[in-house]
Amino acid sequence: MALSPRVRDAIGLLARLVLGVTLVVAGALKVTAPNTSARAVQAYQLLPFDVAAYIGYGLPIVEIIVGVLLVLGLFTRFSAVVGSLLMVAFIIGIASAWARGLSIDCGCFGNGGTIAAAQTQYPQEIARDAGLLLCGLWLVIRPRTMFGLERTLFGNER
Image 1 (cartoon, one colour):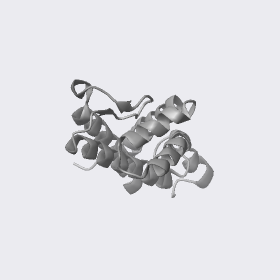
Image 2: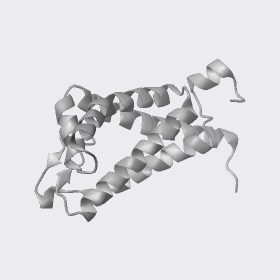
Image 3: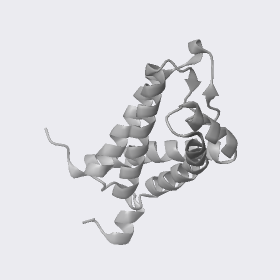
Image 4: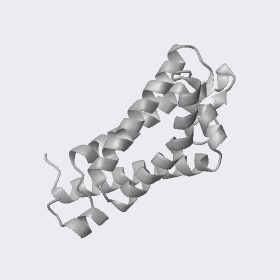
């Protein structure tokens, strides 16, 4: 049974809000502590130390901008592509840390850095980010949603 356009629009709204609010909250919790955010990215040991720091400084700002665009429903497909790419990067980073036996907090919502091995939550973090990735992919494929500014500003055919 095919879903009606209205149901697909509602699913899109839900996907847009779940991914958008998550990104805004994650970015907002990190933006006021840039050194902590930088240390969280450095803890993954995937990039040169200084490059990881710069990414840590910039990531919260990108998360907030993309999240706000998604919540507003503006430039939805572009924002969903960026949000999806962020989720892919986060999944790769977490899986890499897990595979290499690192014991780190993902830093997704602040904090980050080394923790006790028993405190790691890699499977849950990967599952969460995979769910958020699905929200982003839905919006990449079908960016039309209910109550989006894009629809109001640019019409129904966009």
